[in-house]
Length: 58
Image 1 (cartoon, rainbow, N blue to C red):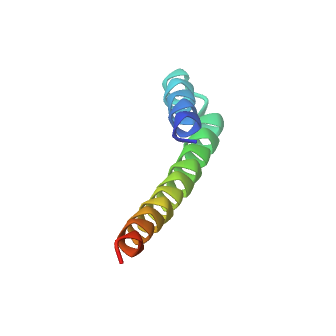
Image 2 (cartoon, rainbow, N blue to C red):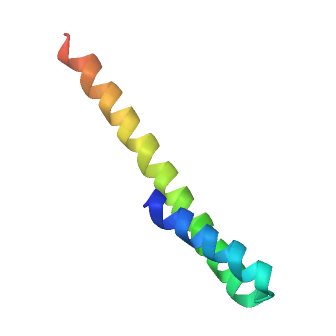
């Protein structure tokens, strides 16, 4: 998912460079959404892993 966020960011930068403002804004928006979804899933996985590790020692 982080890969796709970076790809949309690159597309947004290239489109912005060539003057395609609408495409650049849309691609940047998609990249932002994908990055935040990745971040939320990462935090959930991290908390789940820490919780599982802590309860195994009891």
